[in-house]
Image (cartoon, rainbow, N blue to C red; front, side, top):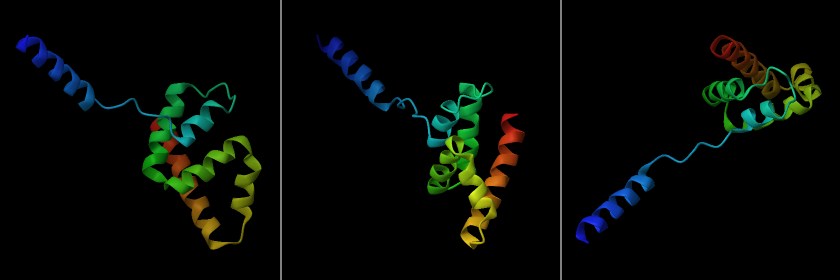
Length: 103
């Protein structure tokens, strides 16, 4: 009985310590929902990983909206606001890096 209790506690502890499955980020979800033929789960996941290291959380949320409405990206690109210019530069750098890393 003592052995079974020890095994049960160890199994429970291992289950608790195991990492939970990761949820898709906003970029990955937008990529998968974009209905583009090249948007495979592997590619979208790779793009999300690059976004995580290249863009802030708020920038990722904003960029994710561009998958559904590319005109929003054009608005940022043409904006005269310095914050929009900085976002566009970070987005371009992210896109270049995603292209290199994810193909």
